[in-house]
Length: 148
Image 1 (tube, helix red, strand yellow):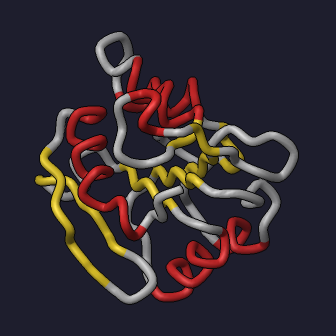
Image 2: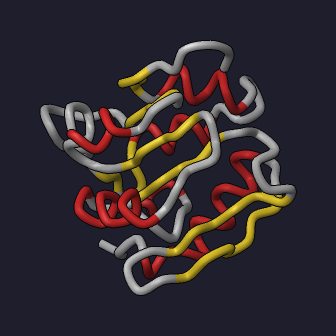
């Protein structure tokens, strides 16, 4: 399987098509790469993809401004880090038990392995808007108070 770090450009292409937004690398660190839309925050959604420990490290270092956070990772459903994030809607990729399993991306025309949630999000881009697809294909684990 291709690691998340090695699939950055394939994921940029994926998100550009799936969201109909221009995407660029906005920050590059040793253990993560941040990809942002132009204009930044136009949909008020942040996708965070990686192994649970990489995501924990990212959350320690970064402040997420978007109101809606989508995690594509394992074991986040009842993680302590989520309880520390205030005032956000939090979603997680579909899981079986405590794990998010990857599908072989090349079988679906992708240059990286992806989750069932990501595949469904992509394949229904002409049928539903971004927020509807997140609600349909990712599991909400925390709801913010107030408006979406």
